[in-house]
Length: 247
Image 1: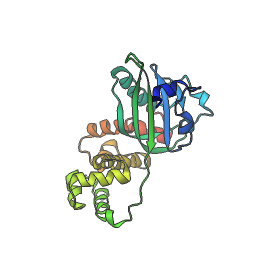
Image 2: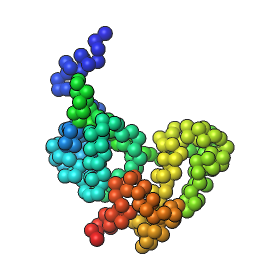
Image 3: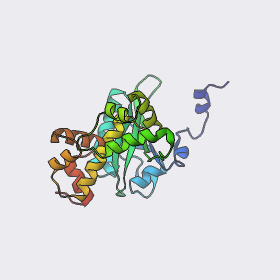
Image 4: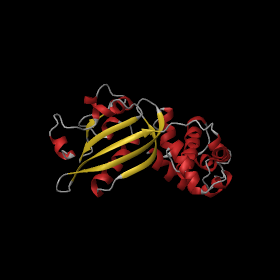
């Protein structure tokens, strides 16, 4: 049998996965060099950036094609992967694109290494999260836990408490949450709270501190740190960006 590396070395042009990922509209795909510049992108990324073609992205960094502060968050991720050689796996993020679309994604970035082991770039994907259909008997108690969490966000329940409501162990609840959401219970709780916060930032005039409390954060600084980690921007920057202001 021909080893995979020998087969790939015979291909012209080299296989990058670009054409395959062009047929997956819910996945952003890219390959970057050590400067964080795009070498390969799929059509989904082009659309999310509001660009006209792939050529508008190739050779550019996120800072050059995406608006701040989202672009800075992506570049910080790239730098960490490229400098440490450690992968970023399953990072839950709220993406805010030039097209003004907003959505949750799970992002993974892996270092690309030369034969000598040197990091020569990275490859990454961001997959959109879709809300599942939970209308089955198997998940009736999971629905109870979800509804409880949604109605108690100002005092968010623990994973252990949600497992009790779902009448199963935390491990069993995690397995079911992963199956339908692609997230652990803890990740899903974070998504729920950040979703509420970004909605309030967009639609209300409440202070950052009051919104932090509504989302279940007694400490505004902790809220800001977690919001920035999930969205790539501070609550204030997010509010200004969604309203088209720079103040």
